[in-house]
Image (cartoon, rainbow, N blue to C red; front, side):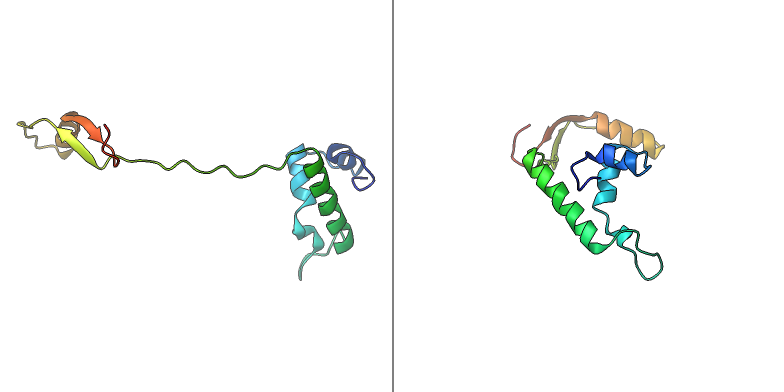
Length: 113
């Protein structure tokens, strides 16, 4: 039904499959349905290739090609400016909390604050 022009949801409904659009799309491009040494094939390679080509054609026609976004480079502070600490605690957690409270500014790798 999909190869004859039906939408993914319509074709899946005709096949008795109740799923969401994304799930149906994953089914269409999953090679596991071609079978392997243990599981039998439920679709032949020719039909699978035709469905994948049709899906690619529709994606291009509807301009739904999503290019991966460039990840933003994270800049982590590597230097800190601190006030002078005078207190000492026996509990290491209290000492750490006190030490962090002394931080005035964080200096990023590019030198900005």
